[in-house]
Image (tube, rainbow, N blue to C red; front, side, top):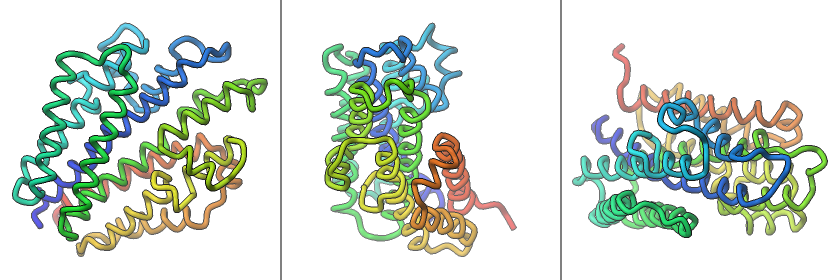
Length: 315
């Protein structure tokens, strides 16, 4: 496979997953903002999502303050934000268009239809009473795209690069969205275990489609430690960090490349640490610090993917 083809397919999968993940992060922030709490300052939730996404500076150059309307506009529809939902869907569609001979007809038609609907939404704006509906639409279109890919594409390198991009992006999002609640939005000690704290953790679980999974695994009240364990170390939870890295590890091994030794080593080491890790050890070291290191580590793996498969350095 040509490196340019692999690059397009990888970013097609990664961009569509990014659109879904941004919708999920905005959704949980929106739900948290509806809870009236004296311990959280006005707009702190929206400022937090910018900081965790690494877009605080870019936002400040374009908007006067982190209000709900401004952040949703910037993260969902703003063409000047390269990571907005609008640009992510456009990038997914453009990468698919570049590889029309590789993707299936069904894949192309789904992505193209999603892009056309996204353009209409940007022109008309998101209705004030339909914010959650818009986020659900983005998630559904991502599910559709991923399902069609899984159901129609030959299991070869093309499939592997799409999955590789998808699950690297998902792993990054899981770490970031957990960090939003656990570090930036952690309530005062007096609120821990209270009603507001319970509903915030419930909103977080729902944002990653993990609420029912939590109930099935723990059969108990929602606690921060168990939420962290589910989203980091549970192999059976589809959006957990471990499940994502398991899939990345599988695809890196399946894609044949003589240059992939270092990438396989880094991903294999990460997979082994998650397989045998314990949540008590992670929390003991500091969950925020751990999640920050995970984001940095995933960035490094992404750079290795780029240098291994797409633009390898000359020997």
